[in-house]
Amino acid sequence: MSSSESTAPPASSPSERRRRVAAHDAPALRGALADPDAGVRALAAQALGERGDVADRGALEELLSDGHFAVQAAAARGLGALGERAAAARLLALLEHPEELVRRHALRSVGKLGDRSCTQAVLAALPDESLRGEVIGALARLKDPAAIPDLTAVLALEEHVGAALKALGAIGDPVAHEAIFLAARRGLNPFQEWWAVAALRDIGDVAALAAATSRPEAVERKLALRTLGEFPKTRQTVEPVLRAMRSDPALEVRRSAASRVSAWGLPAELRPEVRAALEEAAGDDDGDVQHWAQRALERWDEHVAAAEEGGSR
Image (cartoon, rainbow, N blue to C red; front, side, top):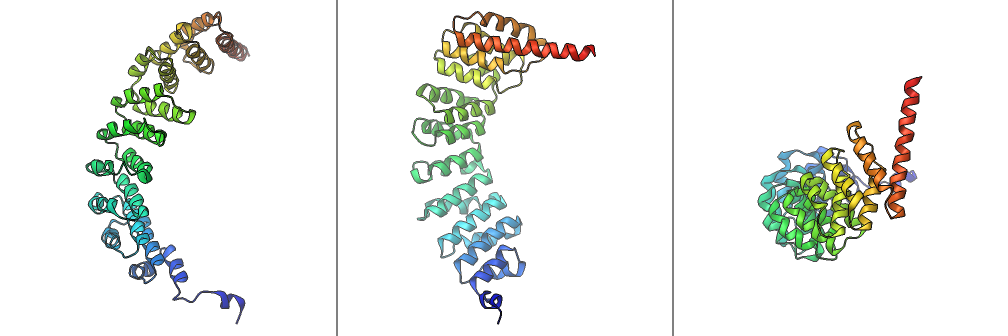
């Protein structure tokens, strides 16, 4: 007998059955649903979800009652992959399961279904610290404004602040603006600040952001200015930044505005007034503001010279 023959698993072994199921072998899948090995049944549940055939929902729901929690978790994951909202009630029932793995996959799948009628049941799991990240992720997928107050409360905690900001951005309701600026006043680390900018950008209320450049706290004004820089350069997004660069009472805000203007590419119709603002900022009392303004002016002069040289050829 060759070495390969001696080491190859027999056709009836669990490892061979798992291999066939993982390959989405149709006959193997049908038999695997009742396989005595829990690993085979779990792989079958995963494969059924990956196939994406809604006709498999009934089989997956049956596996939710399997005697092994790993199979139940895999079935919950498979139902999420199918995206059938009719499975929502069965998945929500799993949020009371004693095994964290099952609850975790049930939450992920509920989020994938996108059924806002599930929001309150998902929110009920928010106090569970071991699942809070999964709950917030599900809320981000459900995009239900009803979750904004609870997500706002998360912003006051030490953990999951970035995830809560991401969820508020996904919901996209301007009602969340005040919560995000309040979080900025409390203090955000660079990672969290990035998510705050992303959330405000995704909400997309440019008028509210322009108004926020006049908020009383410098950290709020900086956040609004940074977010405005994420949008296309129009008069509505440019003018508040120029105003801050010229005259904001906080040095850190003027520096931030000047550094952002220095990196801009602008439509031709806005360049004259931006140049005038930069020339004014170049006379600022602060050396950093002067530096960014002069750098922008030099870069623009080089660009204009290159364009004129190219046009004369």
